[in-house]
Image (cartoon, rainbow, N blue to C red; front, side, top):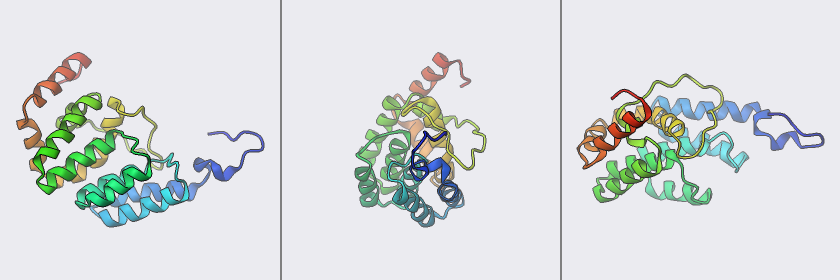
Length: 189
């Protein structure tokens, strides 16, 4: 990302290597089941640049979902003006499922299905994503590309909650929705 003449380099997070590395560390902590550490490091990034161009809030959301900390997840969402995205939808699904709040989990699953392009397909048929250190690639909110990245990042959590995928498959209309998306997109089912 280039700097305009006279612009402050500190306003460009991509020029701040330390924040980029911290965001990568937070994702690595999430991958290795260090959820409190992942949240802590990600919050250091969002504390330094509240606009969060590196998406550290996504790492926090997934970590908080795995930790079953609904109050902290809600506060995180509120601090970012409740701007939704695929990570938010997925984090809510994981959180409510883990808390055993199945009505809320079904609503979150429906949100993943209706708001995120191919959301249920991405969850039921994860796609290999190339490593993208140190920065998360930019993606349009709720796009198939974004939900694929979110599911990829949440994979260690989804594996840790093995009944989640089976539960999603058992919910009315979800397998059909995923198959329809695959058929319409030319993807394998």
